[in-house]
Image (cartoon, rainbow, N blue to C red; front, top):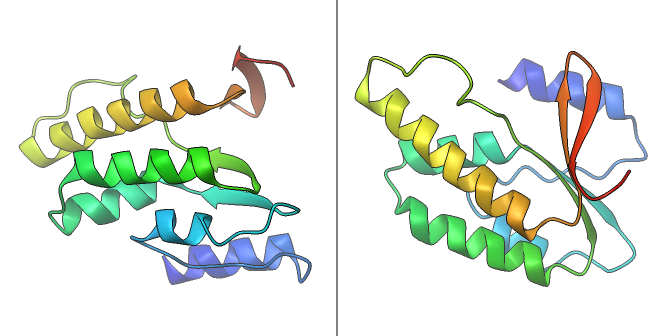
Length: 129
């Protein structure tokens, strides 16, 4: 994971400000100034961190959605679609898959624009590019 983060930092270059916030993204969003654009990369990892920490996912999700709605900065949120494959065999993976689906539904409902990217091709699901 450290190598993956380092690669992202190199690709983005020195003009980006990076905050690593594995659990408290809601608190960070409230501190962003109006004139910034924030890339939250990614909601799936944020959810994974809460799931593995055995936090109340419904409460964490509600706090995140509220923070997104109140955030003064423009937000771009990356999230993964994990429900298109087979149903996982183990209980933790099924719980994650369901929680990710609920999070994606909530994120899409609160967003002005939703774009699914598959094989590098964008498909606008909501709003306009």
